[in-house]
Amino acid sequence: MSHDPSMLQGGLTLGGGWIICALFSMTAGSRWVGVAGAGVLGLLGASRCVPAFFKLPKDSANPQLIFQAIAGALCVLVTVVVVRLFFQERNRRQIEALKAGE
Image 1 (tube, one colour):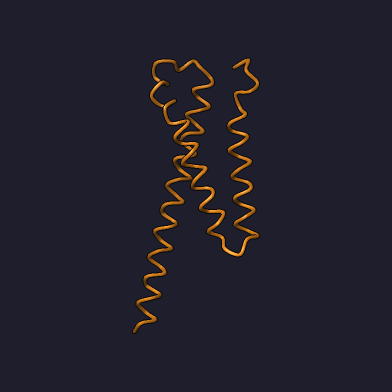
Image 2: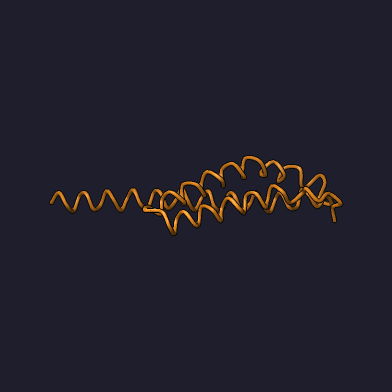
């Protein structure tokens, strides 16, 4: 594996941020504060790690690229889930507003 101990620093920072967002979701007045934070962190992580997907076929033996590709996939997944949650919440609120207007 890699002999670079700082390789996982970004992953640990990102994971710590997601834990903080989860705590905000559980304790804040609105769960959407933590969800929005997780989406922003996912977007930032994806923008940093997704380029590893394009380098991976050329240098598949590099463990740093493998870890970055895995982190990029998780970040993209979190970002997509957060965006879908926001769309579902917007639709729910619009349906409630339409029902309240009837």
